[in-house]
Image (cartoon, rainbow, N blue to C red; front, side):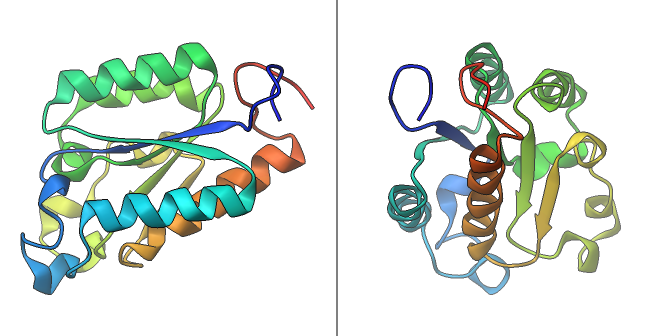
Length: 163
């Protein structure tokens, strides 16, 4: 529980095109939809004693605003930035503030290192507390388990509380 008596909140952000999960390139990303991912995370969060705030946007600025909001509230982030992974200095700059606070984990459904060369470089990975690549949509659950364990261990806290 945080200082308000509520379970800690983990922010889960999904970038461009992730609203197309289950439709776009199922041979790469599978048939699981984003709604399926969110439902699975909500169920797992209950089991782990945390809550999740899941959001998706195809707009870089909106994602950055959500990162700022999480930073202001001291909330950890799990992010699948999609194609912005390789291109967005602005998103990296926003996540740097979270990296210095509650931390963030980067998730990629496919193994980006086995794909096109341009996907091999992440501007975000050097700042991430953890990176999960190539585990399909199960990567989100793995990241949530890690973040919840960190919260429980007092390594990362919600809304500025300490343990």
